[in-house]
Image (cartoon, rainbow, N blue to C red):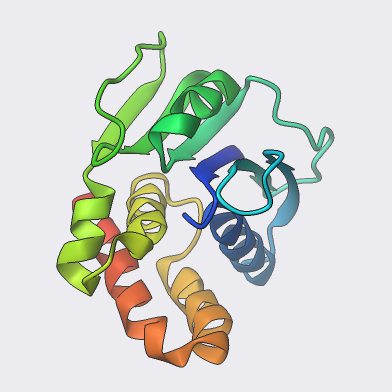
Length: 179
């Protein structure tokens, strides 16, 4: 099993959080994992992309170079960057609440989800859109165990911002149900 993940979003949308959650869950599940990130020039509000490789065997190359096989695009401004980092197979989940037109890429399955709208519906805010898409990706690919991701959410968000835990779990579970 080898997943080369690409998580792209604009500042504050949670692409770095997605990468952190996937890394922590992979470690708990005794998988090999490596993460790298890129950022725009702005500190807040700029585009960023996180790359995570998850494998059940040693990772030979820690780079994702236009060969990603699991992508999540959170915003319109990062969709094309995410798409360019994807290979010709795999799945790209994208937030169709913000990304209005899909660019075809041969061999790549693209899954549009109205993630911002779903997050508002289950939590009253679009901030959970990243977890909606993560839920759909986890359910669809089986990259990680659902209970492990929920435990990492409990530890990461529950300890830091306990008032947001239920909303974030609801967003993740809504994504699971949409897969």
